[in-house]
Length: 211
Image 1: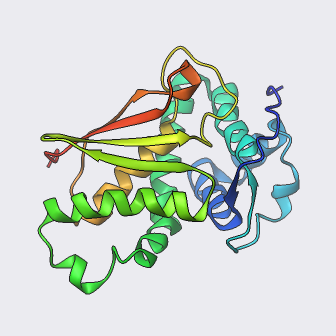
Image 2: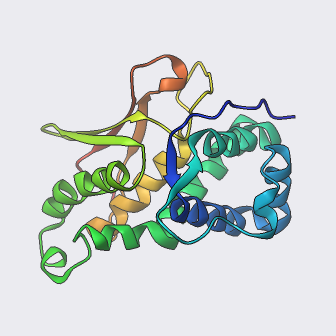
């Protein structure tokens, strides 16, 4: 049985939680998602996902429990793979619509060089989470890479690990970068994690695309 993570008092908007559960159903299938919800004590979402609104009502502890549940069911390797796929699908299924709200999808943005798109779009993605949820995100820009920080992380809230484990966030950033850059893939690696005792979850993103 999954260890119950105490309520955090910090929240995602219902819409982001809804998008995530829909994405995980696509990745795992209905039976797989139901097994995950049963394991994590979130059976109430089997019949109906959170409502499609921006009310901040989905506790970080529940989001973290879902990600811990992937490890409990599928092991570290399987949980990592499903987390990455789920993160990518979450952005693709709906979070890119939040990007449009931030102006990242408008015509003026689309004609920019891809390097400028990433330089502008990555902080815009961070601001979306900081604006619509209790997640604290920001970006630092260096010569050959970016650092994407999450100071209050719903993926690993209340969890402990010897190594970084926020694979849902990694997958989401990978797909977000692909979208803002016009289809290019970027190397994203989590280099520190709150679950491992670090002060922030930090993701290093190389500026040179993989393709």
